[in-house]
Image 1: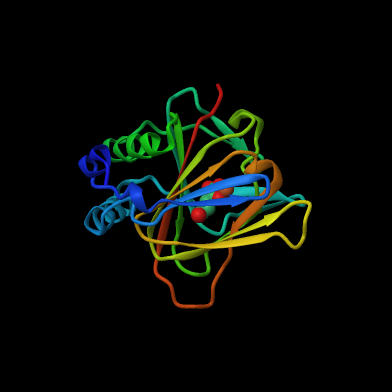
Image 2 (image 1 turned 120 degrees about the vertical axis):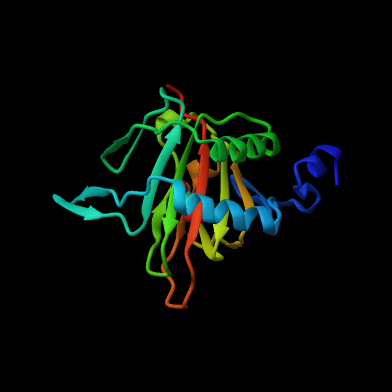
Length: 207
Ligand SMILES: O=C(O)CCC(=O)C(=O)O
Ligand SMILES: [Fe+2]
């Protein structure tokens, strides 16, 4: 373990590089220690301002099947599915997580989208994080706390290209390169009894 890694209690040596056609994933299964992960998870559930947002779909208001929250620098507003999210100011906990993720990613982030999947019935449908304000080939840092859920990827233009990864408690997944242009991803519902899960995606929004 590197000095910097051990100082921050993170295990960078077990990084898995997953080279996909037209995209790169880096997975750190034990980015946070189990103790830190348990504490952060409970803290986020209790202190984040969670909301169930809605989107307009085929002329109707539809609730997102999960709770969400958006934090970041004041100038990092973000639009998707017909909503513009104005960020809440960084908390001490989110700043700490952001800085650890930024160090591993070798980049900076000015915002984070949090998603709270209360049970296996909560989900996120197929999409890519390809909004123009994210820039051309964004590095997105995705932190996972709580229940393990399946993260599925499919290539937009080659139906037979698929990838799947189980995102575990305390892990970090970096999405890099051309991934958002060529691949979509989702977190499907599951009928298995799973506990709650929080995902944080750190992003850089061009103001
Ligand atoms: O919950 C996850 O692992 C995925 C989150 C995601 O894709 C997003 O926030 O854009
Ligand atoms: Fe995404």
